[in-house]
Figure 1: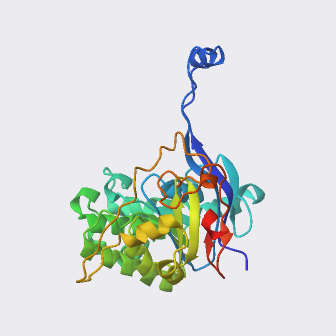
Figure 2: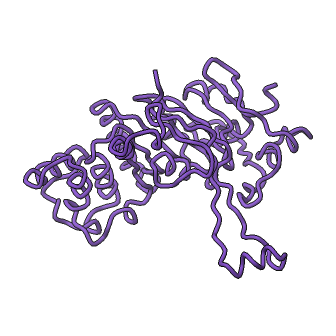
Length: 329
């Protein structure tokens, strides 16, 4: 079956355009070129229909950039995204617009992703009305339905975002995403800023919506315990690259990459035995100048001379388990 989303060799680089005088100075060697941020480096991934794929890694590894590219917010510098087997350029205009609507994103900070000047009914209903999901006459009932689905009282639809708690604002963001009737949600650290009890409520809501609407999820998080709870498959990223990919039970039981093993060792556990925590040595390298070879080799306790020269390929180490490490050879 054709995957819901195919990410084929996608790279993303951010750079600030130079002014005319600056470009002339750069060509004459009087000024250094503007630095380039290598956010993603040749990432390939597929997500099947109805699947929940967890994307994990340290801050700055490219998780959010990948999610924004899949959602159509950012354009890739290289590579392509295929929706139901087609790129947006291969689709007619109406079909391409529908493909964009079918993938919606829920952001980490609901306070900054909701317009503070608009009331909730405007926030939830604007896109649905614009794209013909409801009529003007039925807009109020449609907004009320989306709010109830997200766990909100429709009687609060005329309030502003600042009149809600953090968890309620996140539910408003969920209702807004659901209002255009997507079949895939990209959740970018969508429970990271919430209290633990509220996190559990939002996670349960996501699972209920998955069963009710047959949704596909790309769940971006740095919290491995949350990813273990909600995901079917886990993808581990480091400095713009995928270093390991496996079903959730397989990855947590048999991690193959040194970076994944280091992450799993630091998960807090309710265990009375004394544990010795060994953090990963050093800081994550700058995406302005990523290391050669394996990006993890400056911090890896098992690094070999080969790791600093040759980039490891993402290879199968099990039936559905892949890892990018020379130790797997």
